[in-house]
Image (cartoon, rainbow, N blue to C red; front, top):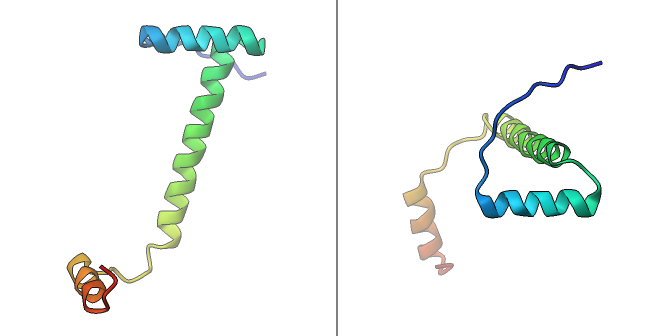
Length: 76
């Protein structure tokens, strides 16, 4: 079994109240809700990093050149 680590986290009072209400309504602990939110956030970060890695070999585009091209073609 994994050991649980304890941490002190300070929440904005309104956010803390919302967490407590969500906990009561969902019959889940605040810790479960926070753990799930952190997992989702980290998974999103991992997905973003994977996308950056996949596209690392793509050529870079010069922003100014792209804007000029869009203007020239009447897109902006």
